[in-house]
Image (cartoon, rainbow, N blue to C red; front, side, top):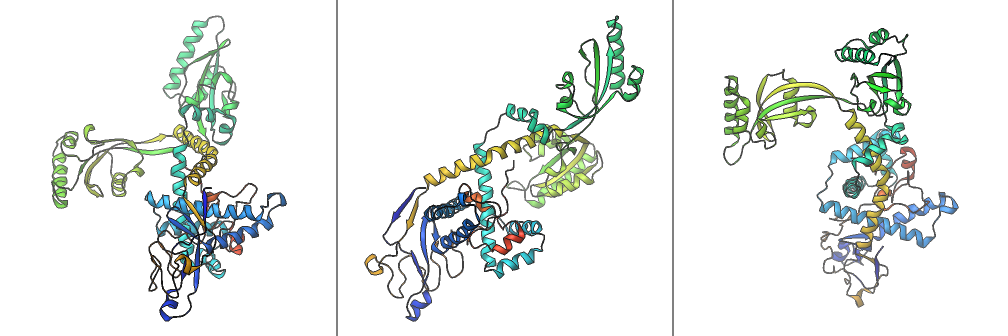
Length: 513
């Protein structure tokens, strides 16, 4: 880490209780700036709390994993600096977390611990946590997690070939590979190969027309249930069918396969596995009338009503959509929204679609975009298993490379960061520090926190939180090799709550796509 040490005073490096200055009493030091990371300070109290927690952890670690005091101090400072730098970047990138997000994370931790959320919070408070700072720490960590995922995913590039190779690999097959139930008819070529081919084509045509495959197999001389190959992973499928089976849709019959002295007819009866997903989809045509400079909200509603009436009277909805719709994504196609899961639409639009009968004209429906007139023109249940398996493969490959990419990104951040370490307390008079009871320039006065500086118990803008609680702290700084990461309490983290919860307020950071 690029840390330049300075022994001169920085204004605001010692915080004074301003009420003492007003009353003429001796100034009381509340805290001290330990380091400056980018545009944010790391307070001495934050550093000491984190150091105390990690020192206790070292006592629990095996001898070979313990760090010397200087190494531990460097790890602690490195972690606090990284947390601060990431938080500042998240703020600049506009990442925000709501009270609902914080509540959800607290709920997850309580659920993992098997206790009520209120009891979990009580235990933190009983052991010295301030509830406001606890929530602030969780908020900061959630912002850091989102930032990490966003930045790291940009560094990981995957090709289609890598995805397909993973799906065919033993690991991919074992973790997300589906199982196939295959119907099979073997037709010997014999002496009259042309007659055998004709018979095989006839059986395949019957299968395509929906004939019972078991009955066709019996007609072809297959005994009992020998036609049913049962559930098999792709590694267990006969070699001659390996390339064909994964490409078949459920219920689809393949082209005839000639191998050895026979023709082989196969049908995919069913498929199952973690990557098996069927999805309800709809095909919708709509016209969006937007309020704006040309027409206000009420005028937009009147136009939508008019278009609804004209379509009811027999005018072509597609032509009206091309003339009036404000949706740039569908206007050229006459307002047609191709097959989609209704969940992708705005809530009001989705509810209208789900209630509508096929080819029923509905509207006007109000959404955040304006007024819609819509008609559901088709519904289907679509097998998206292949897409789902590819998504799972991408997640697995990202997960495999995530930590390496995160380490690289954090290292670059540390190297590029401007960090100053303020080590010694200077002489106030010689260095121009505030005199007795007089706040210096930029110092908080009259009990009000200065810009970027914390007031009494209140986090100032950019102030580092009271330690990022929880397991997710490892994301911010990554513990040194051999250090316990899972379940490791952050600075000030109550040990009792940790042991019972099994996780801390930071939660886990998992890549996702």
